[in-house]
Length: 208
Image (cartoon, rainbow, N blue to C red):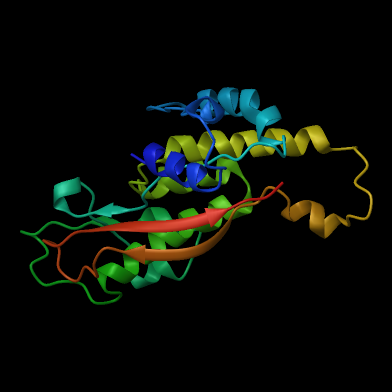
C-alpha cells in the first residue's frame, strides 16, 4: 500500500529528467507469518544492507487492533499496568460477561500500556524482548514479523561492529546506534466499552 506513495516522494526529490529506470533501487520485501529463528536468519542476511549508508529501510505496521471484531480484547487491570514485568496477568473482556466497562484503568489506557510495552521493547534494541512482550500480551501488532526481521538485522550489525574502532564515539553513543526511537503514537478512537474497537499507530526511526 505504501509503495506507490514512497515512489511518488522519490520522484519529487529527483530532477524532472528522471526516468523510471532510476527507481529500480526501490525494492519491496514482503514478510509473512514467520518464526523467531526465521526472523533472525533473514535479519542476518539483511544486516550488510542495513549498515550500508546508501540504503534506507521502511517498515510498515499498525500497532494494537483492539476489539471483538479483531478477536483481541486483552485488558490489563491497574495491578498489572504498574509493572512492566506483569504483562501476562491480564484478562480477555467479553461483551456478555463484562457489561459494565472497566474503569481502573479505562480500556483505552490499558491499550496504551500494551502498546507502550511493545514500543519500549523495540526501543531497547532486543529482538528477544520484543518477542517476549508479544508472547505475554498477544498484542496484535500486524507488522510484528517485519519489525522482528529488522530488529534481528540491527542486532547483527551491532555484533559485526564489536571490536571495530569507532573514533570519537563513546560507549553511550555506540549503545544508541541502530536503536529505534518513537516520535508519535495515536489511536483511531478511545475505547471505553467492550463492544468498541480501535487501531493504534506509532512512528519511529533508527539511524546507524
